[in-house]
Image (cartoon, rainbow, N blue to C red):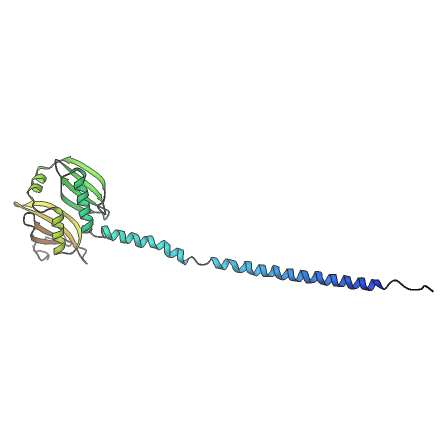
Length: 230
């Protein structure tokens, strides 16, 4: 008799379906882990951007360089001798002539008067390297005569004053008083906010006196710098 049933292969098919489903679930599970891992990596990545400390320090460097440059040409009060010497040389070379007045003006530049066949007032850069502005006029007879009579130059007078009173330069000019020709040099002594005027004989180069300008409008004409009593 042929009563053999042919339904037994269905069991094998169901096992195959279950196995395939298990593989699908396994693949989804591993994919979810990958996505979760990617999410963690993405959330941690922005933390690497929080380190601008080096940039902040590099931005401060130009300020320090600017301060160093300022100190080379002048300070808050007065200019340095080296820059003054360069400014005098620059001014005298512009049109010839001899410098007889210098002023450290507004903590920004030098003003220098030069006399020759004409008279010029130069505004020179703080480091003394270049002329920024020029005013020209007829030569003053007194200025011409005083410059011709002086044996000591403006730069030499500045050097003498700073040897006596170390500090920075306020101003200096050639002047005649009671027939005596002298340089009057204003110096800010080290550690002082007051300008001291030092008088230097324009013939011998000797220091003949000094006054301290302490801003009280009193006459400090005695050599010790104390206020004179009325």
